[in-house]
Length: 204
Length: 204
DNA sequence: AATTGTGAATTGATTCACAGCT
DNA sequence: AGCTGTGAATCAATTCACAATT
Image (cartoon, rainbow over all chains, first blue to last red; front, side, top):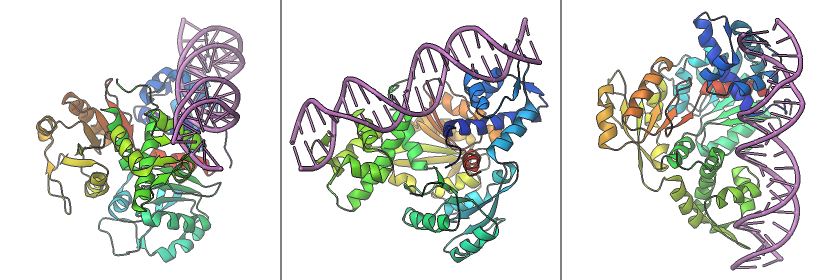
């Protein structure tokens, strides 16, 4: 797949830096040093500089980084410059909360449509819930490349196979199971029980 | 802090192995090789073996691992042998979905109580929502060590400071911000926008 | 014969330390 | 003078390859 040489952890940190920069913009700060920004992001200054130089030389020696400029560069690098359409599959407890979550738009994402076996209307939901049979049409018509999976474990792999065949290239998976995808498709897993178990280990 | 020498990623994978073992138990499989289990978990066999030997020699050469036995060992290692009390702070969209999420109990966690500024009753919620002023009492009475934070960004650090002072040692943070904690307190972050941005980078 | 457990080798990520700009 | 950008050095994680064991 493309972009093989940049570590995934680096790209995660880019998002964190972007968050911190947005805060600085609100405060009308014009310039920030690697030391200050790294502190806000919870990393070492040298790591911040190394991360950024994977993508270009955005700073000015002796001065630091221009807040607006760096933020714009990161938006470009992360591919969030224009609104990215996303579909949500599975509108149970978690899915309906995600549907109501307002933070996506602000960060450059728009939930184009949601799908569920059961299409009864959801209160307070700004997005219609469509039948699973509509997935192919919506994905192709809007050239949707990203999907959020919030279906039960037993349904997850089947849904993934289907949407990948329609052209989905990236999946945010909330189903607590390992899903397999062909090369060229990217999966990030969010598993609440795994996160809690992990913490549980460290507090003993 | 204790347990410094085991990489966090190793502990994450332990949870994944545990998931796969539970599936094998359902299928009444008695024995599994590192090759088969690693395949199910999406890792290399050598990594599985290396991960496990951090904690002991659980296998039998020539045979593989006993499914029941290894599962019990991992439960012990992960500290999920007995039900661990957890509190939830912030019962908005995401928080109320977490409250209704049934998966926690099955995995060894119990949401003892939930807290919010606004204590109006939540439909379908099995757990009462208490006033923030009750946090100290509940944490101390039940010796709660783990908390899930689902409050707005602006409130997150303040809440964290407070609960840490009452004895919370591990935090699962859904607020989209970097929180700082003293040594000896563990934080895992789940940030939906960061996950989507990360995927967005890779599909360009 | 099969499969684990593990030291060695490799690969990858982070940090250091300072040269190079502004 | 101050701060970035970066090669070198260090530290960490993964994979290999095979000896040890059943």
